[in-house]
Amino acid sequence: MRIAYCVLRRKKQSTHYTIRNTEKDVTIKIEERIDDLLNQMTLLEKIGQMTQVEKNSIEVADIKRLGIGSILSGGGGNPELNNPSEWRKMVTTFIEASLESRLGIPLIYGSDAVHGHNNVYGATIFPHNIGLGATRDPDLVRRIAIATAREMEATNVLWNFAPAVSNPRDIRWGRTYEGYSQDVEVISALGRAYVEGLVEMGALPSVKHFVADGGTTWGSSTRVSAENMALIDNDPTLANTKVGDWMFHYLQLGAWKLDQGISDIDEETLRRDHLPPYLAAIEAGALNVMASYSSWDGKRMHAQHYLLTDVLKGELGFAGFVVTDWEAIDQIDDDFYTAVVAAINAGIDMNMVPFKYHRFITTLQRAVECGDVSMARIDDAVRRILRVKMQLGLFEKPMCDTPLSVVGSAEHRALAREAVQKSAVLLKNDANLLPLPADTEHILVAGEAAHSVGYQCGGWTVEWMGKPGAITPGTTILEGLRAQSDTEIVFDPAGEFEQTAPIGLVVLAEEPYAEGMGDREDLRLSAEHIALIERVRSKVEKLIVILMSGRPLIITDQLPQMDAFVAAFLPGSEGNGLADLLLGAVPFTGKLSYVWPRSMEQIPLSAQNGQTPLFDIGDGLTT
Ligand code: GLC
Image (cartoon, rainbow, N blue to C red; front, side, top):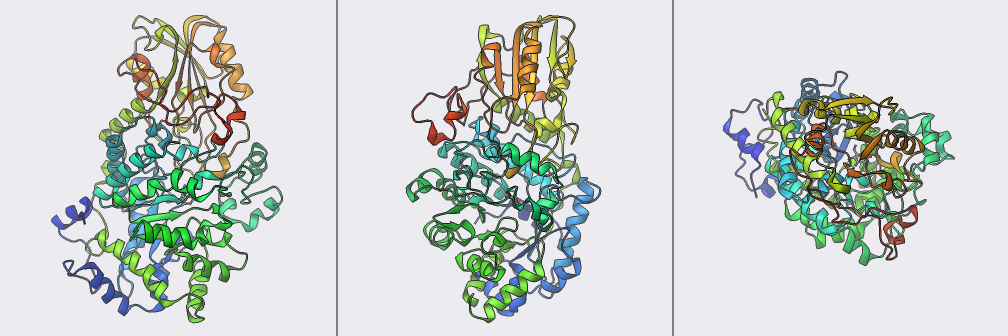
């Protein structure tokens, strides 16, 4: 067992917090320590450990009274004042309350730090996984995980709901950008590296979403539909998204047609395309897996005993614990009792409730008392949770002393800039237009996305869906160009230029989105984007287009108008990394980790049927 960096560092310093449980002697073998603790726990305290509540729904006194095992922030679950110090205060309050419980079992706080500690204003925002896949650089990914863990630990967040090791087989999926690749070996290598980095820092990765979350069929999701929109007020999760009547707009675009749907694939395909990254992550020390909302073989994954218990815990030897996704148990059956029994007996160990935790606790208590869930299953779940908390060293030191100054530090931003440089993919470069000639006197730059950190970051940034504009500190492409070049840059977001110029740059971006809100029926460039390209094309001799998107988009008809085309995916806060590439400070090296379809008819991957895509996995020009 590797003692985690965070615990090692903790050991060197005096313990700030008096540990009030019986487990002071960390040398006692963990399993004996667990036995000792289990024997003292009441059924309610055991179920408390199996309960994860979102931070706005918990009564702090209940953490102490019920021994709640974990609190989380969902996407955008920030303190009133969103800054590292307020985050640390918020999380510390919850952890300290857990130390006041009868047995003082420390709770662990979870958050989606999927591309940096991205909920926190001022945190370093790294490229989303689709861009990291283009780097083919496990060491870079490991270093990003280490930096992310340090920024998390500065706020006492030790559980990261990452990495997603999804294999998106249909890029109309709104979560495509959370996947590293459509090549399962690339996913396994980078997922392993990310897990290694978090484990090295004493943080808890959550490998997700188990399993085949990226294998669903278009139209098979029942999560949201125009019909059940009338019920949205009864759906706190969707009501929480504050999307409101915008939801109809998103539904018309295809939202929630794929995400959380049915993976209609045989077991051989599931084992070939979706399972290997979990084995790699477990070998790297992963101690948490998050179950997928999707369904397979006629069952919700959260009720899949064969895959959760026989395969994951049995065949793959997973000794950590399985957490549900957000409110996912509720989707198993309209009768909550039936749903809870099915999920816990299938192998779920902790429930991300995340709202009505009293209902969950009393329901599971009743299920045990009625014999529908065995005490042996409860003890197995709690043993797994306690094992992870002890291996993380939480009992010795439930909080870190990492200084708040690491959040958004220059060192981390430099790492993010390196990642941007390595993740952008040059797919067209006629007459070697790029890098820009050193004597370029002036250039026309168009597109709101040329000067928008929010477009660079995409979803899961400060807010669940992210949003355009100055959503968090960073540098834009335009700022990078202006800072590093004497070239006169004429910028107009709308591309309305009077003058002509030898070279023009158009930066396009998808509107930020997250999860099923990003499912789209049509991935062709929008009419606005096409018009912008044509407008600038008429003013310049040579045209460069940079596309920032969560997935390949259909650009076939517009490609002939471009002299150079760069797929930048979602680069994050350090847009100056793209300026470095345009100006030749560093060479383009990125290689596509996804197939780039020629048309909508080549989507999903299974529809390609041997046709040649516009670009393929491995494509990418160097300079
Ligand atoms: C979301 C996502 C999952 C995330 C969790 C907590 O619905 O499916 O990836 O980790 O809830 O935010």
